[in-house]
Amino acid sequence: MGKRRQFTSEYKAGLVLELIRGERTLGEIASTNQINPNQLARWRQEFMEKAPSVFDEPKTTKARQKAEEEAANEKIRLLKTIGQLTMERDYLQEAQAKQYDNRSFSEVSAHGLTIERRCELLSLNRWSAYRKPPIPNSRKMTREEQLCRRIDYWHTQLPCCGARKLQALLRDEDGLRAGRKLIKRLMDEMGIYAVYPKPRLSKPGKDHKRFPYLLKNKSISFPNQVWAMDITYIPMKHGHMYLTAIIDWYSRYIVGWALSDTLDTAPVMEALTRAMRDYGIPGIINTDQGSQFTSDVFVNALKMNGIRQSMDGKARWIDNVIIERWFRSLKTECVYINEYATPRKLHAGIDVYVKDYNHLRPHQSHDQQTPAHVYTVPFSAGGIA
Image (cartoon, one colour):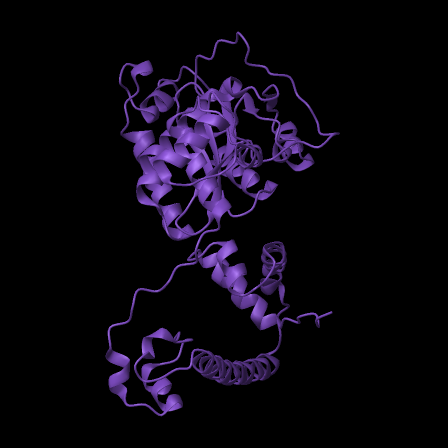
């Protein structure tokens, strides 16, 4: 049995800060550092919970402050020295592992070192540093990741396809051979069903709360009367993310959204909190039966704000069709054609798409008016409070 790995606080903080910067997904960072993704997610949660305590330090005298500053500066100096030595050690280890020579200078990662220092460590002339580096190899997707990506694409394009037709599309169009049972299993895991691309990203527990569907035969005639809320799988060039979005049912205006690399309640609450802060309190919020929407945190938040909770029937995609149609448009017009490489670029791309959709895209159902116009006109006219 191997020895259990130990991680320093500095090492954990470095990975969490890299995750927060959004240049790589949680899965990529965990894979590169050979860490369980759930463990990295726990580190991030602990980091965010303890962050406010940094600003809770009591006031001290000038002498104590000076002593603390000197101690902090010394600690920083020591950490920089340790960090420099660590980078140099890692660089030398990688160079040795790759049987480095002066013809393959660019094949060894820089590890944060300057070109001059790297040449000094390897006793090489500087000319080795100026050869054109090759294109770095990306992490190869697993076979199941490839299948999930293409299943999501084909289901968005052809929502009526079941496992049999998807098997043929994957084979004939993508050159991917897979058994029908494997495709069906992946569809179940992604929550995708024939007739419409409905990613059911979380499955309810046996004792989860259930709420009636309140929109049957209901006339929806003004903004903030009903909001629809759901989560969808977003494929990326390396890995995937999950998008939580909220749409005003009447105007088709996107009032809130949040990206996350994990399926939990936090991004759902983030999207809801921002939407209520920016656009007020709706009368009803309609969701599916996912565990995020039946959690105590979400249910209590709606109760505290006097919002009635409506919930789709089991496997009833039509009950929340408004948000499903928007997800389809987003993937077809934004996600698939761009293949975003990092969470930060994905976030920026979705932000632009949402703004254009809200303010520039006309809707036939509203006499070619934009969702923003339809959403704001009743309020500005004083007709709806």
